[in-house]
Length: 270
Image (cartoon, rainbow, N blue to C red):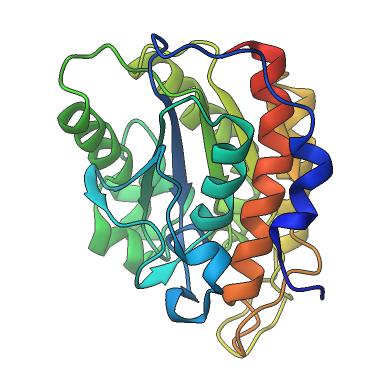
């Protein structure tokens, strides 16, 4: 795979978004899901061109500000650079809220604890109600209530690919999640970019026998919701576990998110 560089984004970023003014509110994006959104990339492996945070981007992790590109990283680094170059006059906030190993049940607006316990979903049991935690962190970060998310970037589904009834219900669960965020955060036009999962059905870590069913639900979701799109993760490099993207894979994932999101934002005039 080609090493991710800023030049890969040149053609995309030559077409700027609509003129933005300093009076506009910040562009806030929710980055959420499970471990491949939380990130298994290593900031220490970033080249100099990526390791300096753009001045107009703020990174938040569960509502707490942190330095972009430190520790373990997800797709936020290359995403931040792409957005900053496309919108140099706009303040951008990446609001990340991800829990490794969680199924869609943890992210539903109403927690079905009995079902979680029946299916023995240990990560969901440990984490608790991830959706409620996201909403609480958002309200703490933006207490005035005058900020709405422009888009959700969603990287999740491996856990659901292990359980047949969760794979079957994936589309329904995703629809509930997106509808609830639009309602609870006052953002009826919130966009969503959904990244496909792509572990093999059997990996060194765990079996994922229903990966095809989850991917089909993710790929078909934009036909049900015109404010959403789905991106491929095929070809992204991974760690030895064949599940989690390595540093280069996370850099490429961030670029793919940006390539899908920027035209959506321009079309929606956010």
